[in-house]
Image (cartoon, rainbow over all chains, first blue to last red; front, side, top):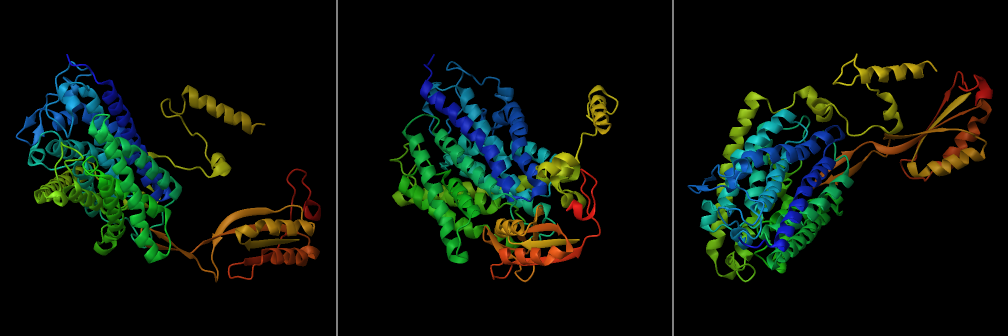
Length: 456
Length: 112
């Protein structure tokens, strides 16, 4: 029985927690950008994924992604319900080597820790899509879409790239999920936005973001969590993890500037939403490259991603698709920039498990990367469209016109995000407590209290 | 009795309040509000898209006073809230038919 590497194991656990925190961070990031009547529904698109996708992934999704390979396309059912996924060093090895994972292969880090880390990626990926369909989507339709998309799109693509699938065999480099997470989600976002159609009044009558401070805090939490996302993808507490984290931080920083410069030139102002969006664009772009590139290359990748994404977010106005919170402009475009940049700037000298990019004499890597991008776009687009059509025809996907006008918070969740200070606290009272109904103990005693007050 | 309603720039509230106190006004109600006149709105930029925001944040001050005091009250607010730039606001004077103090039931001038 191999000895467990406690340092590596500890880092994978911590990195998993960091990535877990990105999902509520994303909820803040997106939630600040929508109108006040849709804050909670937008939060729930991310927050509810923590519950829903976790259950789906633990039961089936992990096995489909990382179970024994079937024709390079999909994993099997050997890890169904996490059976055979060992929590100690003695358990059977993972079927295949995602990236550089010597500890995992030897059993020095528990398979279950790897599963935990992958789980957090599976959770945040569909949540990323939600930015494209915010403010006009039925909660039930969203939930069914997420469950199906996670199983039919996320798990297979994760398998191809990370778990010994056919793109893995082709030598496509994706350190932490540029194709699997960002391009994948970005394409689904584009399909979703086009399928749903525009929000009523878009673009002229849509109010600006309701709380920019929320968006900046969310971006900060995403940035923080991304250290785990990329650094954890080394699957060991080693030099590659450090290198990936430094690259991650450098790219986010440079991308903030990359966004700010054209913004300054055009509007003579650097905006807070722009700074947050630029940083996220840089984090997206460095995701496939972190762990393969040097810090200077990360700065270049970030700068380019920030500037290009600044222009890319306005494509929706030209082509007329309502990508509410710019998932396409940031995640699809940023993801493509990152995947290609990996084929340019990767160095074997940084990571022996990787390859050299075009800049280091291996032009073929760029072609491999382009293949990975094209295949992911094609597969995700077709499957996402099919799933959307199915959901639309069964539970329905778009809010009714009235519900959209009133807002998704009230119509989908029966809640409001904010009370109006002291006035808000006094204009509502509890009408009934649902479990017991009007005549039940709790609500009866409550109404007694109210009558008592009125009698004073 | 008159109801004086003044719409002023938010950062002028403090000065207006002090000026009203200086002429003997003992109470007032303020509301955060929005509106536009000749100042029109302003432009905000989010991710490269420009939004025209027509309604500008203002503060509404409401004061009840005796008829004889109106000119003093208006003068106090006008002087305190004026910057000379567009968007300084408006003052409306209306007749208040009756005023009551809820606690005591007093009415009219005694209730001011």
